[in-house]
Image (cartoon, one colour):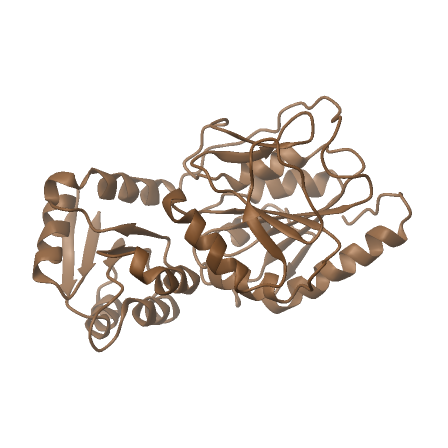
Length: 342
C-alpha cells in the first residue's frame, strides 16, 4: 500500500511516517508540506491513501481535499493534531470527500489506531455480505401512518446532509434516522454542527428510542443502530461489519416494520455499505433513493446501489429533499394504504 503524507510539521510527518512503516506492506509514496504541493503531487502520482493535515500554510487541508477529490480522486484520511479546535474544518473536509478524521498519534509507538484506521479503509472495497433476518411482528416503534425516512452516508456525507436536511422545513412530518460513518468520539460535535445546518431537531439516538416527527436521530455509538423486533431503536454489535455504524444493518432492520411509510436514501461514500439493504427495502415496496454521480463527492455506495437495481430513483442531491417532501404528502394522502414505489 502506497501512502502519502501531507503535513507542514516536520515532527508530525516523522510520527506518521514511523507509525505507518510498522506495516511491512506500506511504503511512502511522497511527502508534501502544504495543500498546494499535495494537489500537484497527487495529480502526477496518485497514492492508495493520503494522510492529510487540516491547518497548513498556503492551501489548507479542506481546500486540498476538495481539489484532489475533484481533479484526481484518492482516499483521504484527515490526521490532525487538534480536532477539538477544528471541528468545523474537520466536517468540511469530510463533506469534501475525506473518509474520516482522527487525531495525530502522540508518537510512533502509539500509532496502532492509525494502522487500524488504514486497515479499515482498505476493507471498504470488500464489504461483508448482509442477509436480512426474519422479524416477528413489531409491537411498537413508528406510529402507524407516520412517514419514516432512513439516511445512510459516508465520505462526503456532512456536506450532503447539510444541504439535504437544511432544505427540509421545521416540523417536517416524518421521523428521520441517520447512519453516518464517523468516529464516535466526534459524534457530539457532529450533532451540534448538523443542528446548525437544519431547522429540524437533531439529537443522538438512544437505546429503546422511538422515532419522532421533525427529528433527526443520529447513530452516536461504536455499534450499529437498528430497529429491534419490538420496533424500538437500539444498539448492537451484530451483524459484524467493517463499517460502524453499518448502513446495511439499519436498512435491513427496518424492513418489515408494520404500518410504516418508509423511504431510504443512500448518499455519497466509498465502498458498498447500504446497497444490499437498500435493495431489500425496494423489493419490499418502499421508496429507495440513491444520490447521483455528479453530485456525489465519492460515487461508491450510490454506484453499488445503482448496479444492483436497489434505487427506485437516482437523483441529484438538490432534488432529494423536494422528493422526500412529496413522499410525505403522498403518504398521508394514501389514508393507510401503502404506496408501491417500485
